[in-house]
Amino acid sequence: MPVSKERLTQIATIADGRIDISDIPEMDETFFTTAKLIVPAVGTEKSSFPRMDEDALD
Image (cartoon, rainbow, N blue to C red; front, side, top):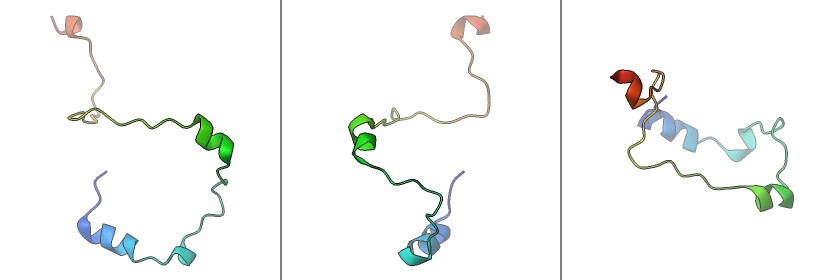
């Protein structure tokens, strides 16, 4: 869901101390040794339609 520029500005002005992070576990070294950066391919878009193989469209 897209976020408006106005909302991003509001979020950016929230003081760190006001953000509740009590339900987020701390990340230790194990996390960073197994983490992988996944960058989506350029031009990929999310769709609410199911994906269909090309041969199903023939």
